[in-house]
Image 1 (tube, rainbow, N blue to C red):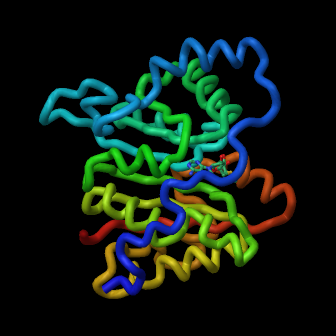
Image 2 (image 1 turned 180 degrees about the vertical axis):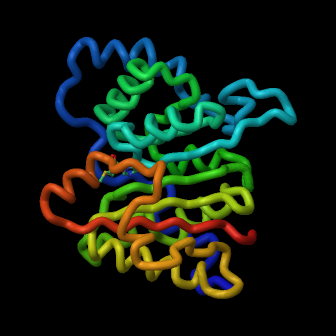
Length: 241
Ligand SMILES: C[S@@+](CC[C@H](N)C(=O)[O-])C[C@H]1O[C@@H](n2cnc3c(N)ncnc32)[C@H](O)[C@@H]1O
């Protein structure tokens, strides 16, 4: 059994960090005003392949969800790689949203929907057991112990991610922060223990020191490498409710 408290709200429904950066150029503002509305996740109701892509019943495409996509390069790469799948990206940082919109426009991606805000609010509206994959790449580390409750890798968000993945669905997480890496492994330890809801897919150390194919490095990963920091990659498969 998992040792953490089920339903612990830690980190849920709370946004930390910035949502606005440098002022948008008119062309960027135009993307937000004219392209974003057509790609935005509906403001309310369930988030499904039917409500997002109009998929008929019985022909629902697999859905992927990226939490905090930054400038959207990983989201766009994955959507381009898997054109028959649907991708939901959530990011509260407006300048990041503009980055994703630029990718969608430049790569002509028709299988991405976007949410400007707290990923956990959107994730909560996805019916349980429906996501093929969830991505959490280089989440804000909040390295000070007194901020640890702000980390995404906490029981509340992890319960939500687990609930939304379908059986066999995969949760991918990467970090370049040693404190976060240890914390994340501690959070996942009871969940990957016998009887837990996930299985850690790594078979050897190289599996978590290198990204598997189809997992491009993000802007934060590249920055960490330039600064001489290590990267860690985790894949967990959902094995039971
Ligand atoms: C360190 S950056 C990493 C960005 C990107 N994933 C990458 O690897 O380049 C963390 C991102 O998480 C976003 N973020 C923080 N809290 C969030 C939340 N509650 N929901 C969605 N995104 C969030 C931040 O705005 C920021 O873009």
